[in-house]
Picture 1 (cartoon, each protein chain N blue to C red):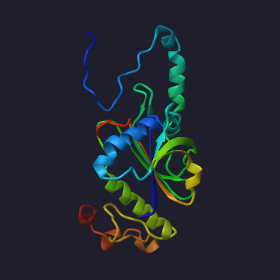
Picture 2: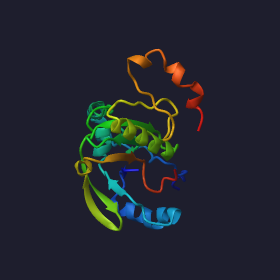
Picture 3: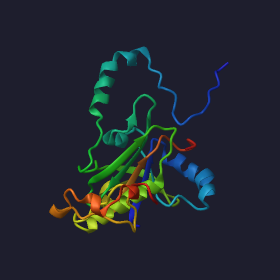
Picture 4: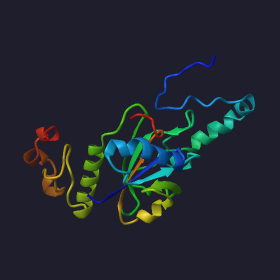
Length: 81
Length: 140
């Protein structure tokens, strides 16, 4: 029987196959390249698909030059908090 | 107040639509008024340093970006604790005031709209205690 788990705000850890385990050093390299942005420095630009007012749209941060932006990340839809 | 809100998670735009339609719109009585961005490979989250590789989701990172595209502040929380939106807006209002004053005014601890600002300069050095009381940091 599959074990029931309590839903939380996080996904369960991603299971890695043995083949993936071998490239752990590569994963560590990737994590090492992820660094926190700095205040007083430019916000990294991006474009992304988005849902806005009943439509699917593409949005780029560049479009918001001249405006104040509050960019909020969160773990996922339907995650309670 | 003059701030554009963008939300972002690793969910697809289709899930965003379902979340809006089936839960959020019922919570607030209307559709989500801002763009819900989809970052399914976490690439945006990685650029901002808030993507959690272990769980494959983005943590609760919140960034204030000014009209020049400069990050003025951020806060990051782990998933189980929600943010204080009022505090985010207060910070935006403080940054807007400082920008409008072209740097001649600063907002002390506990500042909110209507409360006293400080005007940094030679005369204020060592004299903040004369014009600002610690109690103001804790008062509404």
